[in-house]
Image (cartoon, rainbow, N blue to C red):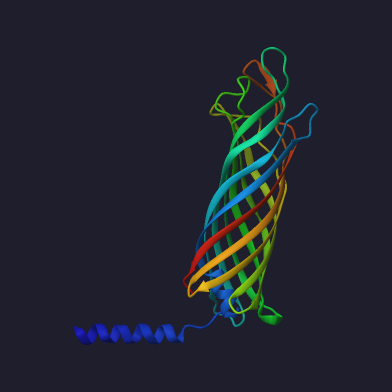
Amino acid sequence: MDRYWAYLGLVAAVALMARPACAASPAVTAAETMVSVNLGVMHTQYHENLSPGDDESGYTPGFGVSASVLEPSAFRNIDLYAMLDYQFDAGNIKYAGHYQPADGGGAADATDRAVFNRIDARLGIGLPVAGGGEAIPYATAGYQAWNRNVDSPNTVDGGEFYHSALFGLGWKFDQPLGGPLVASANGELLGLAGGGITANGDDFGRGFGVTPEERVDLGLDDAVSGPFHVFASVYWQHFNYSGTHPEYYSSYYIYEPFSTTTNIGANIGVGFSFN
């Protein structure tokens, strides 16, 4: 029996030694093959294309978790890339806008106790470029939501829940800067689809149409001690909700107008590389 286990151990060791290396540099491979957690802050600017309409703006703290992998493929100079990321932000942001209470409506200054969730998954390939960098084109899909809780007695009880699926394409570029330090730039062009609003547990309108979302990220990753990494990133994100058709709801005909949201944020975090 001891010989049996020794034989299995030898086979496993040989298999690991024979495992092909990634086309990416070791620094890039380590930065992209990691589990991580982060803390951050996000600024939100929301505007309805309506007069009078709603405007919201403010900062919310948040946290995120992520797992990614960059592995060699069966083809020379082509790596396989996958990632799963979740981000949560919550806090009070300023609401300045219009609502429709029984007294005829009017402008309001209030607070939105906002909660944001975003999850996305990526699947792509890695291609080495000159200078030790790695270009990573990928397809992505996910989900984002905004629980809007405006602190006013005249708003809908329980707030409004904005939600939408995401799908699209992205391109990431990693560049070693010397030693274990890696800089990254990432851009995504997405579509929002299947989205809508839920209020008091009921969906109203016919849902949102398909609209675009654009996102840009810049980051730095450093392997500070063996597999342990620290990283920082900043991002800009912009998208539109197309609005809904008018619907009779709670004694009024209401609809959601076309709106624009811009998010700017920054994150710092720690990770463990398992490459």
